[in-house]
Length: 295
Image (cartoon, rainbow, N blue to C red; front, side, top):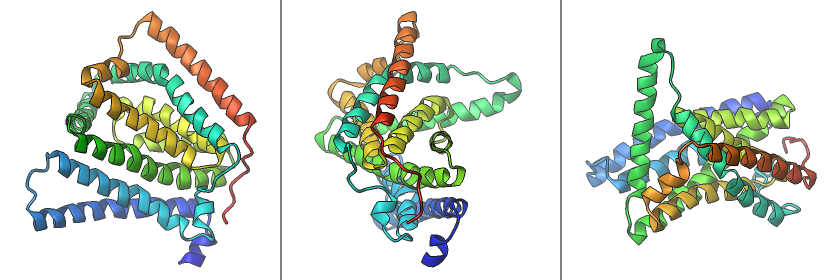
């Protein structure tokens, strides 16, 4: 099997990646059912049950499928680009700065996406999409609502660190790498992966801001060729929400994420987009990236 995958095409490896992820979905359900039976967990709306489900989904659907593809190469760490690269700390600093600068642009995109209205002929689909969005938002709020220190640390480790690692290993570490090998296009691989990254979350009224976030993460990986750079940026994005919610409160978080759409916000968002492009061009200038080849 190892020899077969090593000699396979990028399309074949992408297929195996999603096959493993699909199998991981069933494993998640199986583990939840088994653990619920053993420990008698009946309250599936409890915070700790949601945390367990989130962890198992990240483990079986994202992290382990990426590891499965990586171990079928001569050097898994080199395949995933986990080794320290040149200008590493400059990229890490720039990644955090990029996500700070992108906040106004993301906020405006979020507001516009949430106001999206489908044609009347698609009213049933829109209702289903909004119900899915509300369900996802309810889960997120349940995870963030606690004010105890244990819950805060758990969220930092799970939503901040583990989610960043598992999703970046899957989407940037393997998927974007293989899409780039297949299409021979760095920009194409960034946007194709970002599209899949956003779509797979099934939060349609947050699709476009997540698409932009995915693209920013993708360009960080494209230029740095070090997976820890997008992992750090992803962690910063998730952890900042947890920290603000815990120390300042949900009301302040909503004001940051969902400010009123004004001329000031639009101008700030345009400036934000321009600065993001400038930063990415600066990162491209210090990049020493080469096209991916299977090792």
